[in-house]
Length: 130
Image (cartoon, rainbow, N blue to C red; front, top):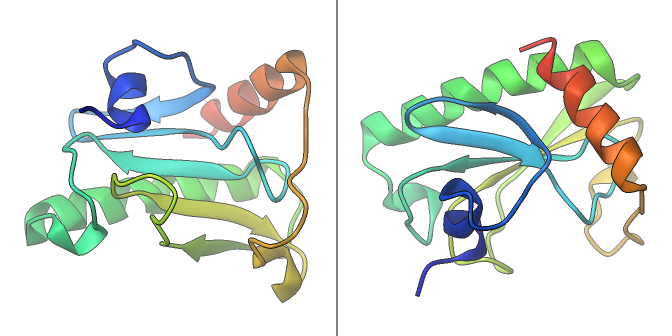
């Protein structure tokens, strides 16, 4: 059964897309810890990041690098945090989270809610910097 991320990749479910290439897609997390919280997802459906081949892993990290810089240019923050958890969706993905303190990377924090309009604007602003 395809994961929710595969359904997003296949355009079966909408997302707030930031960027995409042949091997990866980046879109806003719909339950963000911070404004601009983005997911980078390899298009190949594997459960864990280290299940990717070394080449696929490098492509994913290179894509995440570009997205992180775009987020940092767009969202005021001290740095971009990186987390790889994958417990909630069995499809490898990287969280890129704008940080002002280490506590911002705590996944137990309450999730933020933005309107559809705000999410669209955030995604567009970041996308313009990719």
